[in-house]
View 1: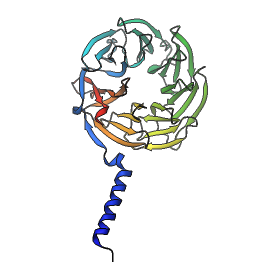
View 2 (view 1 turned 90 degrees about the vertical axis):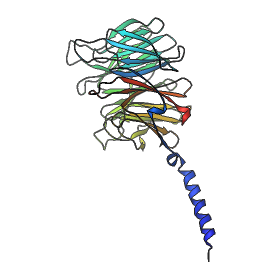
View 3 (view 1 turned 30 degrees about the vertical axis):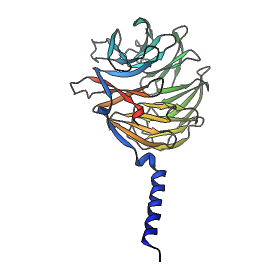
View 4 (view 1 turned 180 degrees about the horizontal axis):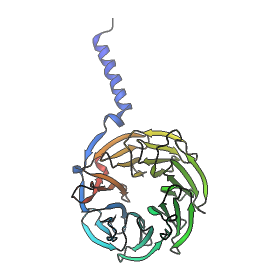
Length: 353
């Protein structure tokens, strides 16, 4: 007959092994934005860019959607304190951002005007504005959604959202500061650049992963990642090139999708609410995802594809930026349109995890 103490010891041993195997989920913590520093800014705050040289955080905003109020505003914040160091007025409403720190240029996507403005970060003055959309022709009109920089090949990729099947991908020559190519029928929404691998990965509103040649910007492949689900609307992608995978945020359906970059094969679904922004941190092997509707940010373990932590926010988290030392995550957080409160930026100390 087995003694009770022996049974108890075996049970405790099994429990310890189980806890060790599932520690990523068992010990996951839920944080709130009160655990971190925040800074209210104003209405219409969207994307962020972190400038290491200036130790500054840029936040693009479009204060009003009224037809007669087309001005934009860029906030320049002290990265450590989030103190507002400057409010830079722009002639057009700013949404998307991409920073060329070495050349001191902040590219600003003006969504409603279909253009990109180049801002000199040393003087806080606009250098020029590139009109990309032909707004005189309704069939060719498109709104700028995302801007992504390829420093190696001196290109800026800009997605234009138009009518169905009318989406455009503009390729800007950053050396000449002019439009170089316009790619049609891609329905591009978000994308990420693998400079070392000479690839540009585009996600579309129809659930596709599209691969472009980084040297020529020409189409290589396009794959439906999950053809069984027609509801997909991919919004953004983050790359983990060391593992050869991408993390896709979908605004229509639940779960973050982990896909194989060279084939577009769906490898894994990380259970989460529908998503907006996604960012991979190779230094910590973590993926960060914003969930506007559920008012939270997910921290995912990139080695196991499991949820590590959740950060609850009062309003709706939108865009993300990471400090150069990979220890601080910044998020723009938007208020409900009916709320009479300012959008704000949240500074998340990752060393607390």
